[in-house]
Length: 241
View: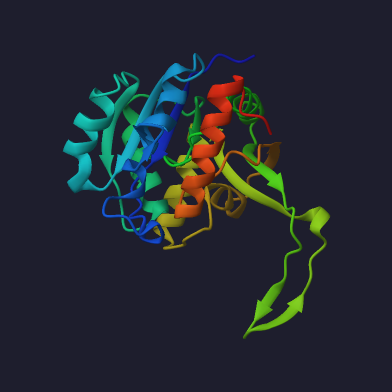
């Protein structure tokens, strides 16, 4: 395998309006720890990850530093970077801050701060795939039938076998994804995820089959499910699929 280092950019700058809580969702408790601390702990403990760029709202940086990074001794966090108006802007801020640490040939995985159930095997497979020069998208096959709707009316029913639900991490060679993000910013294009920006710039993206437990905690129902997953993980020693 080629010689490279792997870094993580973790956007945790969302406002969490769907959660209906008094604090942003990333700081809600999951098994006695802030959700974002649990996510970062997985990356901290992984021997694959050399360093982490954490992206939060500018006004939350002091709180995040003391209550998350320092409180849980997350020594791989290189810096806490102020976020932008949209997730895409936040990721670009994190990628730009990484310029002082990463070479174009290095690998960067972009992982939501509120997905605490990512596992080491998925990280490894994502990194190995990205090392071949394609974008690595962790995803699961759609379980439900999906309808295309316009003006309240169903206009198409895509073949479910071809539909995958995108998750994170989404993993790339650093130079490739930084270029794709900068191009999108210059053209004021907002994509649906990081892979969409690489696709738009002509890059290829391949699937890393993920886990249905790798949920993004955005609603109160997600938090209930996450607590159940955590109890199961701690009780059986594995997260399952």
